Every structure is written in C-alpha cells, then in structure tokens.
Amino acid sequence: MATIELETPSNGKYQQPTGLFINNEFIEGVDKKSFEVINPATEKVICSVAEATEKDVDVAVAAARAAFNGEWSKVTPEARGKLLVKLSELMEANLDQLAAIESLDNGKAISMAKGDVAAAVGCLRYYGGWSDKIEGKTIDTNTDTFTYTRQEAIGVCGQIIPWNFPILMWSWKIGPAIATGNTVVLKTAEQTPLSALFAAKLIKEAGFPPGVINIISGFGKTAGAALSSHMDVDKVAFTGSTIVGRMILKAAADSNLKKVTLELGGKSPNIVFDDADIDNAISWVNFGIFFNHGQCCCAGSRIYVQEGIYDKFIARFKERAEANKVGDPFHPETFQGPQVSQLQFDRIMGYIDEGKKAGATVTTGGGRHGDVGYFIQPTIFSDVTEDMKIVQEEIFGPVCTISKFKTEEEAIAKSNGSNYGLASAVHTTNLNTALRVANSIRAGTVWVNSYNMIHHQAPFGGYKESGMGRELGEAALANYTQTKTVSIRLGDALF
Ligand code: ADP
Image (cartoon, rainbow, N blue to C red; front, side, top):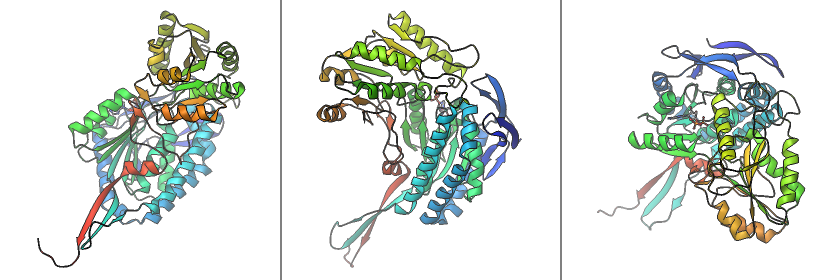
C-alpha cells in the first residue's frame, strides 16, 4: 500500500504515498491498519492511508533514536543546513503539486495553498541558514576556571501538528528541530495526512539519512497520546487545541518529563479606532477572520470598533464579507473553501446557533453555504456582550463578533478580557495610540494596520492559555536545544 495514483483538478494525475514514512521507507503499520481521508468540498473519500498505532510509534521512535545516536550525530552543522535547503528546493520545484494536494485534502483555496507551500519553503530555507550558527558562550567566572556553554540537541522530538495548515506546520516543526541536530517523529492530523506524505518522499530525495525525519499518519488518542507519553521521546512539540495541549503537558509530566512546547488556541482581538484608514482596516479585518475559513489559531475573531465609526464600519464590513467568494477550492478566484470536516462544521454551526439564542444580531451569514461540502457563510455577529460564549470561546470557523468601545482604556481592557493571548491587531493612523496599545495587549503578536502577517523570521506564540514557547525566528531554536555548561579547572589547586 505504499503509493497510489490520485488526481487533482489543478495538477492532474500523481503518485501519492500512503504508508508510514519510517527510516526513509513507506511501510504498512505493524497491525496493517488504515483510515479514510475525506475531501471536505465533496464529502467523498479520496483514499486510505496507513494508520499508526502505539506499536508503530515505538518503531518510529526507535528509528529516530538510532539515527540520533548514530549517523546523524556525525553530520556537521553545515551539512544539516544543506539538507534543509535541498529539501526546501525540492518542495519549491513541487510547489504546484503540493498546493493541489493541500487543496484536495484540506479544502483550502488553491491560491492560498500555494502561499502556504511558498511559506513552508521559506521556513525550511531559513532554518537551513541557522544550522551552522548555533553557538554557545564563554563565561568569565574566575581566573583559574575556563567555563563555556554548548547548545546541544535535545534528542528525539515528537511533533504533533493540526489540519489547518498541514504543510506549513510541518515545516515550522521540522525546520528548527533539524537545524539544531535533533531527530523527529512527526504525526500529522488525521484529517489531512496527504501533503506531508508527499513531502516525505522529498526528504529521502534530499539525502537525509534514514530515521532522521519520520512521518506518521494516525489519530490523537492513539498515536498522538503514545508519542506524548513515550519514555524515549525527549521533547514534544504540539500545535492544536488548548484542551489537547493540557493533555500533552500532563502526559509529559506523567512519563519522562519530556520538554514541552505548545502553540494553542486563541480568541484574538482586532481593534479599530475612529482615526483608522477605514478601507485598509476593513480589508485587514476581513482577512483577519475569514482567511483560511477562520481556521487559524490567531484568527481576529473579536472585533472592537470605536463608537465614531461603528455604524459605518459594520455596513462596509458586511458588504466586504458578502463579497468573499465561497466555493470550489480549485477555482482560481475562490477565497473561502469548506471547513475541514463534518465535526468542525457541526461545532461551528453549534456556535452560530448559540449566538442567535444568546440574542446577538446576525449582521450577515449565519448558515450553511450550498448543500454539498462543509461550507459555511462568512458570519458576523453584532450587538454582543463580552460574557457571550461566541465572544469568549474559540470557534475556529468563519464567525466573528463586533462590539463598540468608547476609550482606548476600554478597548485594551476588553481585548485582554480573555484566557487566550495569541495575537491581536490595532488599526489607527496615530503612532502613539498604536504603540501604547501594542505595549498593553497581553498577546504574543500585535499587528498594526494589518493582520496575519506571520513571517518565519519573527517569533510566534502565545501568552496565557495560548501556549508555551515560541515558534519561528531565532526564538524557536531555544525549543530544540538544551544548554550544557562545561567548567574546566585551570592550574593545580586542590579542593
Ligand atoms: P482539533 O480539535 O482542531 O482537531 P486537536 O487539538 O484535537 O485539534 O488536534 C491537533 C492534533 O492533536 C492532531 O494531530 C490530533 O490527532 C492530535 N491529538 C488529538 N488528541 C490528542 C491526544 N490526546 N494526545 C496527543 N495528540 C492528540
């Protein structure tokens, strides 16, 4: 079952690997289990892929351990960098193919999928550049001691990624882990295993030694739980829901106290002041919530608009949201495709009902789009109060709330009135307002007069219940290294 022929509307026929990628080979699982992958735009089965059980996690971890202790430990930092750059080049050469697989499997618009693959390429290339720049320090403790530090790899890293940006999250995880000399067992989300398996083929082609990067498909409760509680996994990196993040932290605590980094949910505020350039603000607010069908951990889902422009803003934003093209992910003009699964569709529709029952006004949307596929209309709720579930809980769909504020202090207080703290934005033409608000928001990222401008050179991660640790930029290297102090006694004094 290693490879099957599939077809995408944009790129025609291709060979899709379906096995577990362990030791540079696509193999069946120990128990030969498999599961179906669904196209969210048609609700039809695309194919089946091998399912990793706990036993397969053991096999993959053993492969990663052998590579870490063996061949990989002798690969120079420069050579590691070259491998990452080579992988990024192979992905770039296959950009259209990878994007087509992403749209087929996840349902995201093809133009956006191409952007995701390009960003993944940039991320891997960037971390390739870091490989030979991992440096320790010398520390002047006293005259008869020479003390220095080394930044050493942590070891075998379990990485668990979500379905909203399958190939991009793959690169965010693999890039810094490999740059710093670790080995990896990465589990993709059960909803979207295909692009990662195609890219796994390129790992072998790039020349990585067997066992350095292992990619497994499987479910959270089995393979994911096995990875996070494994006694021979040294670190687990997770992106997904806050509820599962807590389970991973517990599993690490109850097993071998493996290091943990978490990138979790959000309910990010997007603040628009009276003096904002309204066309610019509407465009970014729209992109902030409806990009990727609202399935972004940093989605700008709580919109706060100052009273002077509130009515005008709502009328214009409604128009803008209704102009977003929802439909076939492979249509070049589509902006919003289907939600990823029936489960997500049902969850989001549940929140929409909840908002209606709580008395919020449906400014636009509020229902299903079409009758095949998991499409939902871009939905704006107004007349909300801060205690409503739709204002407090992450919906992870194309649904936002708008409320009015009078003063800067009120906007800041409302923005910070959440257990989450992943991202935020402020729209204003006053530099002082922008900087004051940026300093006051309790979130890992603040965008000014834009939204979702994530770049692989800049750190990304959460305050409060949005996570632990930072991905991207130099900051991510800290997630994958540990500091060793070496202290050398000079001279011959005795204790
Ligand atoms: P969502 O609810 O949006 O699907 P999840 O946080 O459940 O998000 O999923 C993100 C990733 O976490 C997926 O790869 C999923 O398989 C995995 N996962 C889910 N439950 C667990 C668990 N108990 N332990 C480890 N990983 C899990």
